[in-house]
Amino acid sequence: MFLVQLKGTDQPDLNDALSIQFKLQTLTYYRKLDLPVMIVLFHAPTKQFFWKWAYEVDTYYAERGQEYMTVRVSESSVWQQETPSRIERDLTEFRDVRSPGIDLPMTFSLVTGEDGFLGTPRAAVEAALIEAAKDVSDVVSLSRENLTGAHPTIVIDNAQIVVNLSGLSSLTFHTQSYPAEFVATKLPHDILTVVGLVLGRVWPLEPRRANRM
Amino acid sequence: MPSRPRSHQLETESKREFALVIPSRWVFRKANPDCGIDGQIEVFDQDNKPLA
View 1: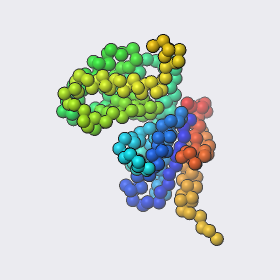
View 2: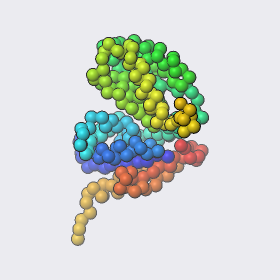
View 3: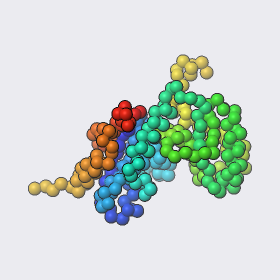
View 4: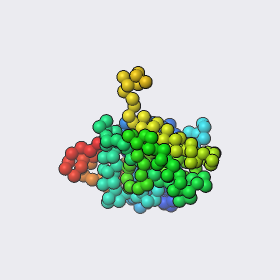
């Protein structure tokens, strides 16, 4: 099951049409809901639909006091015949990730930009992260293989690191001012901390367990 | 006689067209648009079992 917010536009220029205005408050509200929210744009001139999951919207760059923000939908996200199958796969993943009986460790795909991160080559960044994750190998494992559809990912580029738990929960770690000398040492542990926060949102500790800590 | 705003027409049109692109085994239920949600979709798989 999922929720839908439909928007329509008469804008003939597709590039302009794919930008949608949203109240920031609404986008924040979507994150608090138990069901995933899909944003769907109807382009009336071509009668095409474009879609994205609301969790994919990053509100970080919205300025303080800003009431609205522009959400950009990709031209490649046009609704096609195979789109429902893709959505069903995503929903199955959402259900499995949320299940208390899920098999651990959970595997996150590492997706690092070709340029690496802040001057450190991609292979070195990923190797450091994979090494650090060995300490928590009962909960998390990392893979260089990136699958299609919703699945746990850690996306690393020079501006930000996004830890995404199959769309159910995600945190963006903005890194423009991250010290480059810590990339091989501190960064992997910072990323794993973010992974822990993301997992904690989906599987909160039971009160009895929390009291024992 | 007051005319119907284009935004309302577009809303109706988009809902009608969207109902045509989703599989017939999915069920679209209207929600309260004041919450920023237009509807809820219950998804049934190929065997007509509810998904998620």
